[in-house]
Length: 419
Image (spheres, rainbow, N blue to C red):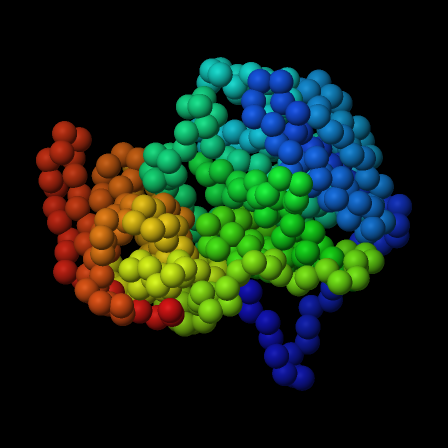
């Protein structure tokens, strides 16, 4: 987000939710599942968010431990109430599931033992469909986005996840209508952290902190919330959003005294701000989600040198293009959360870059001084090898099905920007 400074530039008008009765909210919190693991944090998260929505003057309905029929009835009622409203807000906390490209909300009576169960779940697009009659909208999904049919074992899914976003896709926002903000507590294919029992989940706690101001601008909320959550989880949980507000839109409430601006429990000396990474991305036309920080592992780990941002060159059919690697966090000699921003448009069908610019969020394997990432189809193995704390080499290995090599790109140097 770029903020104009100086007296010669006129700031855009800030729209506000008008009146205390012309806004509605629906909060669904599912914690007592019949067939799946219980979610004790949800028992606190959902009521706390409902109270916060009410403090903004929204007419709020709280539904807890709802089966599929109850969820559908609540959504139908919510859609009727949202018709003609200036603002509508939706929040779901509970189990979530992903099949294909879709994210689904899990009712408490769903049995997720087989993939066919997806037919009985509630599509996360449904709240957007029923609230098209509202002028401005907020959708918050505080749930995992993995595939429970594998027994909730997600290590391989996380390692193999390929999430690509173009700058055009980021601007497109939510397909269900204009002036909409969609917040996902975690990335597609990943789990959301629960946090200690009896407390809010890390995402819910961060959301409540960011909604605590007297005035909250939804257009700029994702940047603050993403940073807060990364601090609270030491770089391990990345919030995703779709935002197509064309101008600032503020909702007003009553802040709670003494509420912290960001989550506690992190070591300030471990936090790496990514000032140079954002400058490099802006200079080279590379997309990068706002609000990112990196977090070094504790105790002088050998993996500390991998955390931060690095610039490198990437060969493509068009020549050599600037690229950016951000290592958000590293779990000791296991995995690393990274973001890669490169030139190229990602073709979902061919799993290849075809011009334009994108950023990817991936989980890489840590092998000594190397980070390695292999896409789902095994088409291109990407490797970053550290030579010292500030530089190393980048290489890719293109493979055919059956393991036959098609070509190797190696020896391209990367150098540190932040860290």
